[in-house]
Image 1 (cartoon, rainbow, N blue to C red):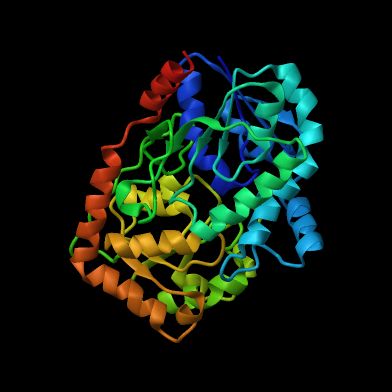
Image 2 (cartoon, rainbow, N blue to C red; image 1 turned 90 degrees about the vertical axis):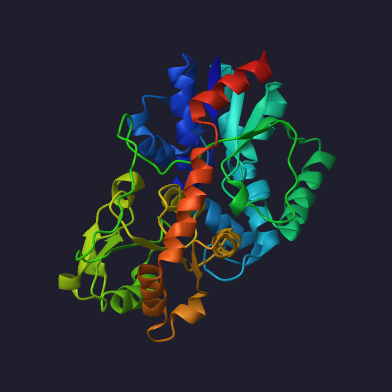
Length: 379
């Protein structure tokens, strides 16, 4: 088969799809992506064709701000109408016309996107090919679903209908799923994986060793880890007797941070699997990829949700018992983040409960198994 992936051009949307990309290729299928030039750079190591079309993230965000007056990544409780404008309105508006002729020429047998991708199902409907989706974490909030569907309905009224998915590959383990979740049609659970290089080794957790300094990782992804956000957190955690590592975004440098450089090891942008394998606690923003990657190794977390779906992810971490949640305004209180990290390092119950989540994740089907199920669905 010929499989075309159409994720939002952002690492947090792309990386959860890569296990399926690699599994399809291992199954003997042809794989390609559609997206702007930056997406081509993100998947350069994946040995896949890229149909270069559509708007880059800065252009998408700029258009959302122009239409709504709200920056969707500025932080704070998500505005559902603004999210819907970004995903259902702006991205298809700025990308569909560029993408359609390239996709038509490539002739996919299946288009696959993430759960925030409304370009892929629009292309699939226009070309009359099946569409499948991969979730990025817990189910949408009810108000989020209403806002997204309202925008979809407006498109349908203009004759721009979307193709419904022939499968929903769900990376969310049951313990992390929201209470109102209902199993969708054609549901296929898919084991989440922390991002690793092609053919790279699978990450393995290592238990803390008595007498060794604990190892703490601070990572806020590629959109939210600005020095303004991270400086106070780094300085608080650096006061602990721990080895502290902080990830840098693709374009960031250590010199941008106002911290004691002797107390912090900055990590250049690289696969998360390489960073998690010798980590005792993760401090993060609640990105689903980072969170599920840590939990798959039984690593407890302190989650500071900043925007988007991160608040729902943080809530589920607390429900699972595998970590703590601090709102940004709480983390700003002196020593609060330090206290939270200390609690996770000293109370073994958090690691025990994180290990239970890891066992649940390990029991989910692999990407290769899901690809076989998709092949059966498509006949």
